[in-house]
Image (cartoon, rainbow, N blue to C red; front, side):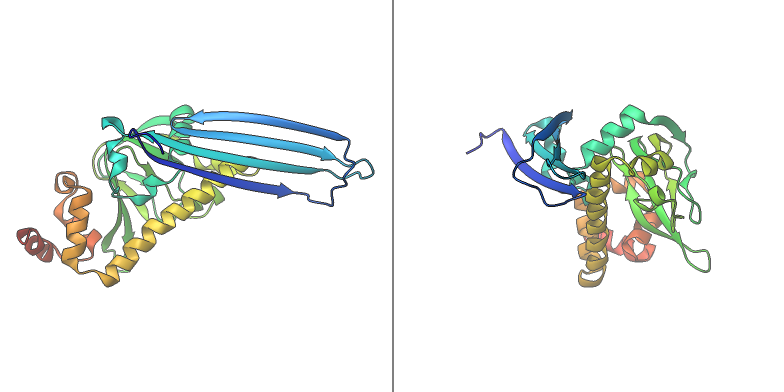
Amino acid sequence: MPGPDIYRRSVMLILFVENVGNFQNDARDGIVVLTHIRVGHYCYICIKGFLRPSTKTWHSWLTFFFFTISRCRGPRHRKSMIHNFNSYIDSPAVAYWKELCLREGTLRHFDKGEDFFSAGQVARYFGYIKSGTLKYVAYGEDGTEHVIGLEFSDEFVADFPFSFRGQKARSSVIAETPCEIYCVSTVTIGERMQHDPVLREMVMISTEAVFSTVYDRYKDLHIKTPQQRYNELISLHPDLFSLFPLKDIASFLNITQTHLSRLRKNI
């Protein structure tokens, strides 16, 4: 049994096989390359094997990626012990993206009201938010603004994963407060995906996590009452009203400001 200081440990093994043929038992040559990368609390082990059967001219590559996550209970990690406002932040890929942004990103300042990216354009950056808050906004045919997402410091902002493929954004991201964001070019990430299997796997894992976050919110919109959704929203981020105006929170909950005021009085 793990000691009391360990509250979570997970292991994931992923196998990629490329150019696979029928191996013969008398394979004479073999090269194995082991790469070990540690990022924060995450350990990446990459094993590449090259095998050449004695009577064949083709070859095969086997690549394994082994991820372990081990975190200790304590004040530094107490945020991870509760549900996050944006549940994608619990993804095993988060440490990878943060390390990438801090190592390769450029720290950029965005003023309040400035677009991080705009609907109808390809997002230029994938970003890790050092400080500040932002909102995802979609616009109705009459130009009405609808808040569909909120982002906070120590989280990420991106048109994920569409910008990596050069696709235009279907919503905008606007700085609600002055922001400092470590930005990495989406073009660079997209090009690197062509030859970096670890990056491709991180994109896949993160895409699933983002989809899960969006799907849960869509489901809650249909099966939970406005009061239930408001209560959960505040429990996940008690200081939300000090970070975003009432109209944005009401829009995010898909209710009117008057309705939101009534819900606040019921608490």
